[in-house]
Image (cartoon, rainbow over the protein chains, first blue to last red):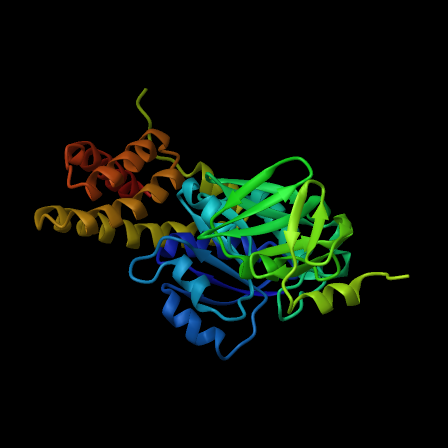
Length: 236
Length: 106
């Protein structure tokens, strides 16, 4: 594995570099005291991991993550524990290290990186891989990350600036769009049947002309989405 | 309880790597005075946002030097500075002077 370190503090860079030097298969290719230079570097060279300080003047670590189109695996480093939740909203971020970083914590981080690098790649549309039925989805509610089992989600409904995720146990209201969550849901299980609804079609109880019944929810089917729904059903 | 700066964390990180320990001390001795001076300058110019940025950097060094009470003060003071409150300036200066004296002994 190769990595770069981005931190405006020389002492912080030295610490991460020292921790990396104790790992036989991890090479520090370059160190940067600002994110802009690192972006230029990443445009020319492929890197496995970036150790990134979240709090830098001018162009922060979060700005950096948002700027990269195909970011490598990113480990956030910071003195502020309160950024942790925000950091995990980005798929590329695999871990979050609070300074000063200990050797023990760094070892755990490496394991997370290795696990993350060996995971099956996602498709361009962000579809979860074919083992999707066993995977989870994390949603951010009141600064808490709540884990939902994908196969327990029944319906996702768009409501203005929010979506409502209806599961077998509970409903969750999340500030995001139907388009964004659709990218996170495996096509094998989920289908958009109306501009305001995505359903888990393994949960369908029955289908009438223009609606689907899932538990007690009657979901409308739009005319344009109906052919795809019918195609996916195992019709006798 | 009074706390004193030390190299416990750096020694743990270094293990047997004396070269790294020395290199780190050199970096610390170069970087800390610049940040201390920058803090003083920003306070003098009433640029409290920039002073807060420096306190943010300094608080990591407080942790590195095992100054946990100083770190807690810096966490609060950083936010207060962003709101334009410099009441803890004297406390921070005392800590900075303590570190400066300590680094001079290394």
